[in-house]
Amino acid sequence: MVIAAPQAIDTSRSSSDPEDHNLTSDSSSSSSGTEGLDASCTLNGNGDKHHDCRGSIDDTHRFRFTARVEEEPRNKIYCIAWCDVAPQYECYFATVCGARATVYESLPLTASNTEAEKAGGQNSLAIDVVQSYSDEDTEEELYACAWSYEQDNGAPLLAVAGLRGVIKIISCRQRRLTAALVGHGNSVNELKFHPVDGGLLLSASKDESIRLWNMRTNVCVAIFAGDGGHRDEVISIDIRAAGASDMFLSGGMDNTVKVWALHSEEMQAAMRESYSRPHAGNGRPFKTLYEQFPLFSTAKVHNNYVDCVRWVGSLIMSKSVVDLTLWRPDPARGKDAVMVLNQYPLLDTELWFMRFGFSAGLHFMAVGSSSGRVDVWDVDSLPPKTVASLYTPKCKDTVRMAAFSPSGSTLLVCCDDAILWRWDMS
Image (cartoon, rainbow, N blue to C red):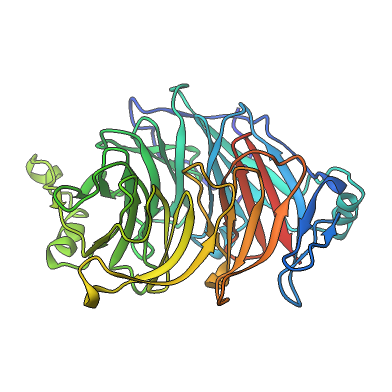
């Protein structure tokens, strides 16, 4: 049974499923509500506790716990992705849990359900299940999801991937699988769409490579691996924002962070050629470009697995299991030299595959822990300062990811116990 979708996502149907890589659209047994008075927020400094989950961010913003969702079956939720492809879709987000991908709507809080939340009642309006897709391979475990859009009408597309290494593209308008990208030799850990060209997709894999795909034509444009590539599992990637999207980052189990170029003439030509479908005209396969050497590579920032890398303007924020560091390459001092600008102490982060998230404008950063706590940092502060520690007594499992909404007003947290938590700034 297909879950009814809002008109903004579900508009029309016009395509058939790719063969042999099937996902089914089904109903979900997820349940939502609030924890009422069971949640608290500890402020940095005086340690005051507020049972209504309010934590001071500045004079005008405070966090309040507003909802939780329990996904079924009870697998780890590894990833949350807000749909930021167009303003009308920014209230939607997706999660991946086991072999299932679920699309939710984050609804605005009303005066009535805010009062119900304060009283410890159910807040069914905070998060609503919109669509759910289950892989026919029940042994699949999805680790990553990312959003793009259909070229002809701008409707949302959701990419998911995980243990099997196959990237699957779902049309939320048609509610069906539209493409399956096959090529990785092992699991896929993270997906990132190009911020300017929504047809181009980067994938990081356990096979020690990063691949650049054109999902419009289903070809692999480039493979980043080899002599100068990662020597172990690639865990995280990030591409620079629109206007500077000529480079991307990668971090991996070899403790290194690498910066790769997308602006070379050869790479730009390959991107353009990937749209021309030359393989369709002459019967020959597309000639994938191999890039073996990054612009920059260093192992001087971290001494353990690098499980999350993100651009902060032209600077780099990277996380290992023991530290979180803001830095920039400093090649004038050596080919792998770096300048460390700030370091953020971490507690209870001994497990890897735990990702931090930035608010709109990159002012705040949220990072989870293995104890269920989420610390919110002021990125602009020197020395580093936590502005809030968010937790509830019922959230005691490992936080795999924290993700702010595109507006920055809502923070979502996903955990190993298949529970999704929502916090709002008011």
